[in-house]
Length: 288
Image 1 (tube, rainbow, N blue to C red):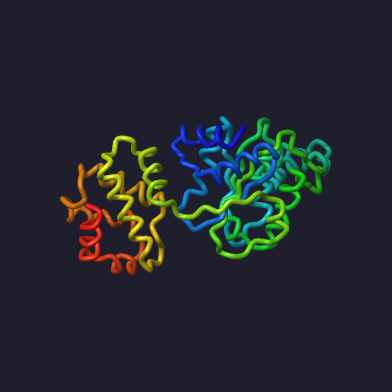
Image 2: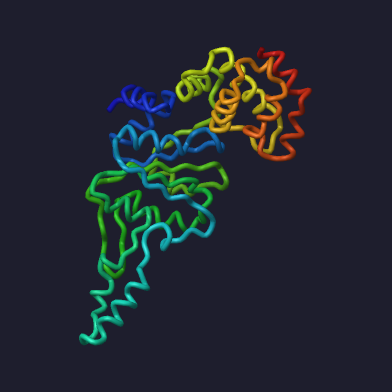
């Protein structure tokens, strides 16, 4: 699949991908390589995996990373309660062998093992990998290079159908060179005005063109301010939905509703203080 074909198919799902991202995803599919998407929070990295799963017509398996994530939560663990029940039930029948206790019936598959053993190739999203500890990256190296997992009690399990792997990172910490070498790479920044307008029209096709441009212009102006959390694309879409739901057609004629709906964009008290009504009036005057 060429990157242009993929770009069009992603657009059909409502995801607007630029040429660079579409090329990285296309190469990842064609070469069977993981793709690392890096960029600030709120630019649509997670949505890439969701849209790609829709395009591929396959399951999306998501591993949300966090500090302290270990193999038992990411790869597999044994169902100890079921093992204990089997031991008790087997005591009256002469006992149970260790091999029987460590069979697939007692294995709890977590996202990484589910992706490796899936009957059809899923899209595996390893979300916010930079939030996990550096030690956890070592668990990923075998998976991302050979697409296999070693379980001491069962041996090595190799994927029959390689999953499509998408990793995301927000820049919380530096990722290891070993992990980066195994991945193709694309950086997602905040979209420019025209690209964000295209995203808005794709998600809210019934929105009036004038209002859509006003919405995107205000959001882009907010991102230029020194905020603790700049509004992302998801916040922009939420704000658009809120305004449409209130029947707003022109921001210049809905100043009170505009201030009230800032809860969609500004997520801290400091950021609310940084964008008072006076500032919003000035911005609306420029974009109206």
